[in-house]
Image (cartoon, rainbow over all chains, first blue to last red; front, side):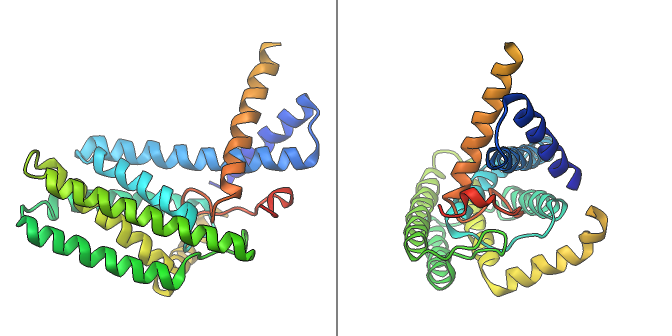
Length: 215
Length: 42
């Protein structure tokens, strides 16, 4: 996986040489390419698992959900790309399978609403206490940026809450919406966990296991 | 000429991704490489 980063850097070097870009532009291209490769790799792997086991839609919801909300909340990070891809693929696949096959039990609509409200209240508290969670590789220090990211986080969380409620109410029309409501709730819970110290300890523990493999 | 166009397109896409990430809290998922210095102040 470190080779993916090396490939991004080499490609950026080749492009910069050909197009006569400066060092800054080269670094920006390498950074952007690394992000693109990471996203594409995770998407392809979760799509294969999702299509094979029948939870592709849930996998895509969690892939987009976590991706969108992490851009404003931040959260625990893996020190290596291999650790990131393994955690991402396993968490997305396990949560999708759970939403599709374990929690896919029809429950009363009022109980469903109550569960949603409880989970989102919990997430609001965690977000209020922790957002934004930065990393040494991308520190967030500017007060105006912190304020903007906090505001964005609450707006996105509210949007996901409304989306969950819409899915809950559409369950009567098509039962597939039930597992979508479950996966949106699980997405937010998982993201809230990565904001806590427990989540950071978990990621550090995973890193210890995979650092040797990705070196 | 065609190669130059492709390289310019890749550059534009990569720069768009990098710029979007620079204004965010972090990368799309759980790995955050070191941010280029020229994007630090965003």
